[in-house]
Every structure is written in structure tokens, then in C-alpha cells.
Image 1 (tube, helix red, strand yellow):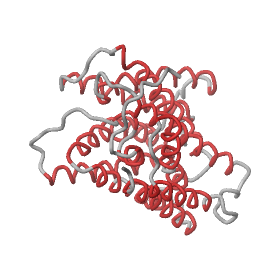
Image 2: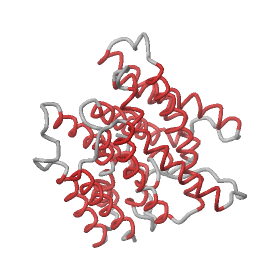
Image 3: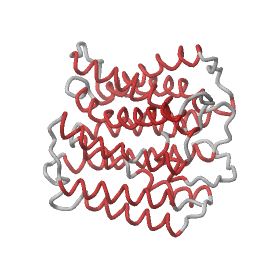
Image 4: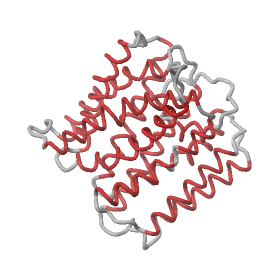
Length: 325
């Protein structure tokens, strides 16, 4: 990994950072100053719904497409949207040399490792469980920030991490479904590993000295990730699918256009208009809604232990976010 360029941590906690924005858009370009409060609320609601559906539609896409190819196609579609969109907005720029390390880390750890491991895990476990496991990422960010960035962990943040880990352990209780089949436990492990990869990119994002804005860098991250994903897909899964059914194609298009490109743009606008704590706590509605949508659309049902675990994890994250210095 390239050497970190450490900066003085801001007062915004890393727990707030990870639940507020994906690592690739931690900071944003300027948002429209004329946006009304109603439009910001609408954008926030759009982000929550769009991101909640991401796991559901990807689960549908996996009926026709193998995991690595699914992520490669989705990321490539996002790049196809972002390049012309930022160019039209006057935000597209050539890669600054100083931002190459962060582009590599975000592309490889978040867009390749996180997305691939998460999608592979979805093959074996329900989307609702994958959503909850992925939202354990903030639990790993705080201790990593302490170890590698020297950030102080407050008592409240430590308590939040402890509560979140209790919720995570509930997901592996004998009656939770984690042991229901030979492939269930490896599926859970893949998603937890994905969350750890996301935390790596988040901590590095925190430490990087930005030249361009992260939104300006996002198309290049998508492009690099697409190339890496295609190489991995060819090596691990062979040739791309010769035919993709309409439902799977629509699911991948949703993931690339709406869930990734448009969703991330909307969140950059929201981040500039609302307090960090408000945004970080509001976005916690995403996994809750995702569980409900999984139950309705995918007929996965509602596991009471999963719900208790999700609420416990989210409470821990909320506690830590509000406890940031």
C-alpha cells in the first residue's frame, strides 16, 4: 500500500464519516446553493431508498450473472455515466499525480475487494443478512483510526463499538441462520471480510491530502476498478455471460446508474447541506429499509434475531457517531 499522508484529524469522527458517505465520495464538489430544504430532504430520501435497493437488485442479478462479472458490469456502467456527467458539469479533470495513491486504494479495496466479496457472499446468504453485516464497517474503522492515524477514541465511541460487536455476535447465534447450511458460514465470512476491506479504504481516505475533490476522482476510480474486475472475472469465472436476462440486466443498470453514480452524487449534495451527525444517523435508515425490501421483493421473510442484531449494531454505530470529538 502507498505511504499514508497523514493530516490532522478533523472534529468529525470516523464513525460519522463511514456511515455518511461511501469512501470514494468522502468530500464533495460544491452543491447548488439554491437547493431548498425540501429538495435536500428529497435527495436524502432518494439516497436511502437507492442504497437500500442495491443489495436486493444485485441478488436478482446473480441469478444470471456470476459475481465478478456482475460487479465489473455494474462498475463499468457507473464509469460510463460519471465521465460525461462530470465533463458536462465542468468537473472532470485529468488525474492529479498526488491523488494516485488514494485512487488506487479506493478502487482496489472498496470498488474491487469490498464489492466482489460482498457480491460473492450474496450468492450464499440472504440480502437482508448481507446488508446488516456490511454495516459493521464503522465498528472496524474506529480502532483502525486509533492504530494508524492516532485518532483519540472517546468513551462513547468505544461503547458504541462494543454494542455493535454484541449485535454482530448475535448474527452468529445458533438460531440465527449462520449455520443453516454448509455454505452459509463462508458466505457470512465473505461479507465480514468485505466490511473490513471497506474500512481500509475509509481510513486511507481520511489520511490522504486531496488535490482534486473525491467526486472528480470517482470516474477514474470506477475505470481502474472496472479494468481490475474484468481481469479477475476472466481469471476466476471465464468468459462473460453470452446472454443476460432482462431482469438481471435491469438490476445491473440500476446498480451502475442509480445506486452508484446518481446515489453518490446525491449524497455529496446532502453532505454539504446538513450537519454531519444528522446525515450519519439519517443514513442508518438504509439497512432497516433494505431488510424490509428484501422481505417484500425477495420473499426472504423477517428473522426476529436478524432484526434484533441489526438494531443493536445500528444503535452502536449511532452511539459512536454522536460521541465523536
